[in-house]
Image (cartoon, rainbow, N blue to C red):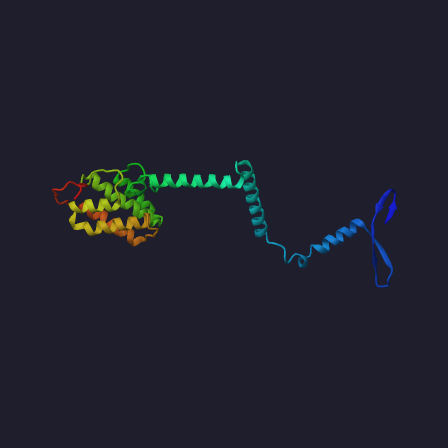
Length: 229
């Protein structure tokens, strides 16, 4: 170690091939050591980033429980008792009220938006079909069919009606198209709820059904449309 201008500098002796010692100042020596230790060969067994993250997480969970148990009367045992009581209350409420049911909405109904005329639904279906959006085209054409039947008073307007219900009710006044109505409702359900993809032929079948229904005279049925069988 040498003292230069009031500053102490550590030097490491290094011998070259001619066996002549050379002193290296502290800072360069430290930097050389850091470069050496940064080589991958020294870190092959280091924990991965995920392992380090999990270690930090479990450390945080442990500290959280330690803090909670320290603030709870009775320590960790008191904390466990409180957790058991809370779980028991939740179970009692669940058993008393039953499994939460989905609030009825118009999500399963045929018409998901505001009221529109049959012609408006047909125009929307035509736009979708022109753009190759067959799912939307099928949906709008089926809505056009049902709305048209409502406008012709063959179906009573009823919020929340599904495509299957509309097809079954309409089949009583239009028995010659019962099978086509059911097939159209099934296509609507497939693309709306079943995750399936429609194609041009599926849309054309519903389009042809819409045109055919417009030309068909209803059969008088003593049972009012929409009434329970």
